[in-house]
Length: 547
Image (tube, rainbow, N blue to C red; front, top):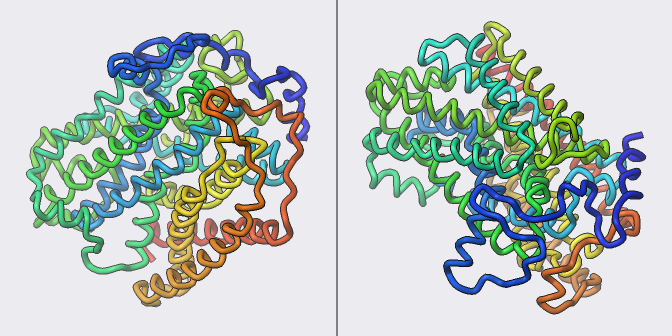
């Protein structure tokens, strides 16, 4: 039934475009400027280029800063409190992961004009569409719940009851979103992004040991050695920094902002800037807790983000504790807005309804109603007494890390589909890099699965064995890919045509046929992820009960 609903809007597509909602067509209206739809003048001077970048800036920066949400703040703080600055190196390694994944969705959004969820349904069928979107809806809802956990914990630091703070935050989120003007929403988001920069003075107030921090930033290691709990935390860092919702959000937000292939270089720049901003922010939080708690009784005793704020005030002074609480609330609001919007965008994709921030409530009631409903339900769950908030937050981030390989596989397949991206398909080197990233993500999830089943196993030896097996697998896949690359149909056009190339209406495209090995591999991956998620819940239950 869902498959039919996805296909119905295709009949309304114009002859030359796959864009579903006509609100996604027209001038680019950003927080800091407007670019006319029919303005064909290419920016040449530095001034005109910077003005164009300012107008386009938004989707990349918002998705990245939204990544340093409540779960991110809590996870980075936990890493610093329990392991010092020894996990800073994980953040450096995540920069290329962020850029590679999000650059691909930038191209998909600008070239196709179609959301990520709808592309998966149309190109891979109902089963895989439901598998992908079902994962997204579950994970996003849990993530939004952690955002309200962050708001509740941050407000509690200032003595404000969650029964007051959480409803106020929910109303604020709905008010920011239901404006009927994309550029107004984006300006409001930039206000919260500026407030998020408080992490920098917070880190300075933490009196970091810069030599130690620089060493740990570039030299991999782990204070106390690798263990199953440490691997869980590393997966949580990956999951909170590179989450599946980001793929869906940025692609739809690029479409909603009306960015076309001509402006892809500028949106790439927006994404790269955002990647460095998010990693600097994450490092600042990790360093703050690492050095403020160093040598105190709070080391290794993370409970939740509220406990971190209280501990920072106790060990580092009331100012640093208050800044952390403000950053936690601010990050939670940014994250809640972005993740809820990603869910509502996907809802619009699946059910073929109008889904644009350019539309008023009256014009897009189901879109805004889904946003409001998710906010209300997530906020209500957070108000349940005595929930283990710290464990829930870490488990949700780890869940994101486990589900990311699945989302990345669909992303990689779409970006190698000539019917979808034409001259914008992935280059061979990008496929190689994305495959390495995907293998590392699978390696981490395999370590979690094995250590949960066999808790006494030597984690270091396990990592080496799995890394060797994955390296062999990558070598075989690389050989097959090089052979298949020569036979792949590609679209060759000049620069002008490339800038104006858009995906044809989806109704005119033939769905790709998967080979038997690919089909078997996809079913194996999906089955494995189901097992991994179940074992993650087991691990979270063990941590919550102390067993």
